Structures are given as structure tokens and as C-alpha cells.
Length: 534
Image (cartoon, rainbow, N blue to C red; front, side, top):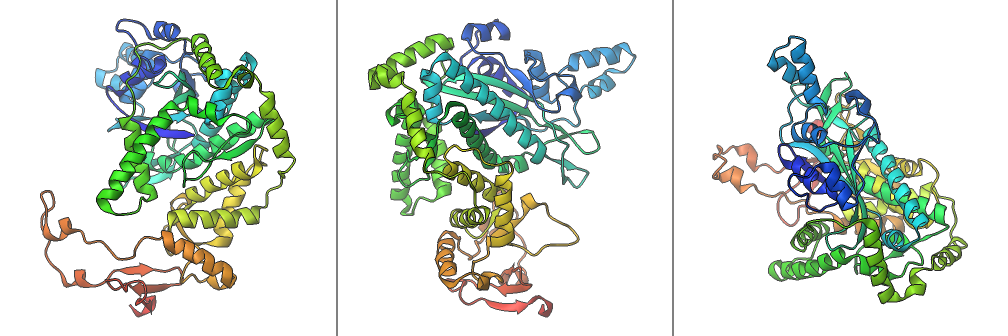
């Protein structure tokens, strides 16, 4: 999976230079970054991204502390000191020299984004306990797939604000990123993962430097995470003749795909952080339901999960241990748990994979997949979802149904396009004067109530999916903003106008406007009115 965290400017980069860059340990004072990385047994950070040539960097080159301070500390050119010195030597004033070392405007709050790429638990077990060739293969696949996902992100999901009205435009492909590899979690258990720290500095279409529109990038985090899971498992299964199976670590939640034949005991043994988080989550969920008497929604559960992870996070170690010492300790613990024969026998996973491959086809029915992902997204996201939700679900579908077989290129985008074309309608009327990018459009399922295309859907199919969609759809009753009506500490009281008493209006794709009355009968008493009658 892939997670996302923003990096604030100023001193936040020191956290990465003192801890993240040295394997999540603590770098002793006075010790250079290179020496601390060597003592911790972690590889040095390296540069990656298609925008590196624009700042004089090379992919795979070592990340230095001065470059991190300039780029992630203040949003400056990685070689800012050299640029200032050259400009001063040429006769420029200090102000002009300092301006030449900046990449566009000054960063306001966030100078970078930390993307953490972490393989599934079964891959972690195979990497920690496998033979040296298997370990090196998994590390190479981790590097390659991380690069693929980053290339997709910097090609398709970079947006930048331009002009005085902050218009959002697509940025030129390419980012500047530093990758740091770690081998363990805070409990000292196996956790191969990469921190890819992206600079917010991207190039606009006019080739000038601008600031990444982080919100648009963040919205596609889940879709990129599913792409990482899909590609890593596909490459693992292809290289080692393995297959994947669904695993249900949490009752009532969606499954995760793991390598077949890896004992669940070993997966749970390695995932100590997850076990502590889930125990705390159960406590918080019980407290929430007892306090509110409300069901636990997906959003509330996600917030409680973040809180549980934060509260159960142990302190970081002072120093990291080299990987050979860690692998020896992990092997002793795994042998004590399941025995030496299970730990050393990869043949069991390959036999399980052979049995799975005989029953799984490699063809993908795009039409059937499009219908299935639309129904699932409609249930989980109600009557308003976007392109990113369908794309993420399409990648989950491929990982779940192919069981490790590689999907043909662009199958995920083909399924998403078919879902939008055949089973979705726009959630708002299109504006020809101001076309909206596909990433920002809202859709509803075609079988939703009052949909102009719902009559084309078979009756039994329409009723079944309509009930599922309505169960997840939020109430249409508007919320009153008491702070705006009556005034608050930060908001002055507004004058009363008679127009505020009128019910709100909701646009429908058919060109109608429904007056939504207040109260419990809001959804049933709505009267359609033609827009030309207003």
C-alpha cells in the first residue's frame, strides 16, 4: 500500500535528515549523514523523478544533507549556495542572487509530500525469511514498481495554480523526489518500505516553476496505492511462479490480497504494529458507539484508525541494526513459531499457486468489470463519486480476479472509461463555457432514482442496485450553519433576508430543478420544475 503525508517547510526537513534518512533511528549529534547511514546499515537516499535534469541532478545520485535543506527546507534550488555565489561573483546584488536560487515563488507552508510504499504482509515475510536471491529480487521489484507508480503520478496527476485567480492547470510531467529505504518497523520486525519525499516544486506549461496543487494530487492517493499493490503482486507472481488469494484480517472489512501459501501465523507475527492498532481501534469503536449510539461509518472508522495508529506508535530506536543481524533474529523468531521446515520451504507457496492457476482465467471482461465496480463504488460512496474512486476500484478488481496474472496494459483505464460511459451520469449539468476536467467531475449511478437512463436497466437489476445505493446515500436535508446565521466568535452576525427562508434547489442532469422542502418528507415531496419556468 501507499500512504501520504505532507512535509512542512522550515525545520521539518531535519526530521528526515536526522531520522528517516538513517533508517528511522536517531542520528547522533555531530555525525555526518553518510557515516550515520553506514552505521545504521541502510542504503543512502537517492534522487528520482523526471524533473531532475531541470535542477542539474541525476537519477540514482546520492542525496546530500545540503540538498535536502535547500529543497525541502525552503523550496530552493538544491545547489542554491553555488548559484548565489556565481551571481554575486557576476556582480548581481544579494537580493537578485537570492531570487535566482528560488524555484518560483516562496513556499507558504508545505515544502514536500512523503509517499510511503509498503508491500503486503506476505511479501514482507518472504523478503525477511527467504534466501538471499529471493530477498534481492523483492528489493529490485520494490524499486522498479515504486518508480512505475511515481512515473504514473508525475505524468497524470500533477496540477498547479496559475495567475491571480489561482486557476488550476495541468503541470508539466516531472517531479523531484528523494527515496529512502528502510528495513524494519518501530518494533524491530520486518517492514521493507520506501519513503519517497516529493518536492512541491513542479514546472508549469510555460516552463516556469510553480507549486504543486497538493489537494488534487492527494485525491488520487488511493488509486496510486492500488496500482502499486497490483503491479508489485503481478511482478512477484511472475518472477517466482506464485499466485494471490484474498485474506480477511478484519471481520466485516474488505479483503486484502496476499501471496498464496504463506502461513497466516507468520503474517500476523510480522505485523506487530497492525495487531496493536486493531486492538486499540476496537476499544475506540466501542467507546464511540456507546457514546453516540450511532453505527460506525467508513469515515468515522478511518479517523479512529488514524487515532489508534498514533496512540499505539512506540518511540523510535536510538540506532538501527544492520540487515544481516535483523534477518538472523527474524529467522530465529519464525523458526520458534512455525518450525524450520515451513520457514525454509518456498515450494509450499509454489504448489498452492499451481493449484490456483488451474482454476483462474486470464481474460478480463471489461463490460462486466465496469458494471461491478460501479455498483461497489455506488454503495461505498453514495450517490456522488468521482473518476478516482472508479479507477481505484478497477485496480482492486484486477488484483482480486486475476490472482497474480498480469493484466493487459491500460485495462484499468478501459474499465473505468466503460463504467463512466455505460453506467454513470454526471452529478451536475455540464457548463460549456467552463469545461471541467474529468478528475473533478462528480457522477451518480445510472440506476439511481430520477436518472434519465434508469429505464434502460432491467427492473430487477435496477431495484436491487437502487436499494444498495440509497442505503449509502446521505440525507438530502440541509444542515443549518448556526455560526453564520446567529454570529459566532469569529463570524459577525449577518442581516436577515427573506431569500434565506426559501428551500435550496438541486440541479438534475435532465434540465430540471427540484425544490427540496425541509423536514422528513424532503425526499418524497419534491416537485420537479422546469428550469425555463424560474
